[in-house]
Length: 183
Image (cartoon, rainbow, N blue to C red; front, side, top):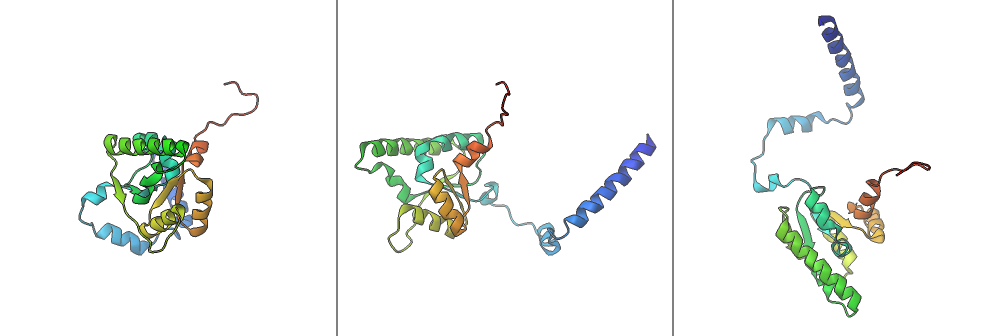
């Protein structure tokens, strides 16, 4: 029994040294010392993990965001831009109906969830379309944009804004099925 314990300690020691040598460039010693030496005073903001998430109109109207927030996959403060709240002001009856459904979902998010939801105003100075204002707001706040709009995803990628795409998440969690496999 003692021989196995000694052998495992040596084996894991060698493995630890090899991993440390490979990852030595990834670890900044100065930053590690600062983190270990100083403990910032805890505030209410520290209990909210993750970067803020700004919701796009497409994700609000889609409705799956409520289910995602309930499961806890998305953490951090949820920000709803004030210009997104105008989704129910359309001349087209179908768009108006979908916009009202989106507003109902926003109300449910605010009522049901323990996730902090905040409605913020953002005025960039010049007249812009909604997608551009959304990306500018996310860039200025260092936040993620939550969307399921493919075009907005590509524009955000080009501008360097981080995006959480609901459709990509949906495709990622689908089970892999091989041809000929029974379901």
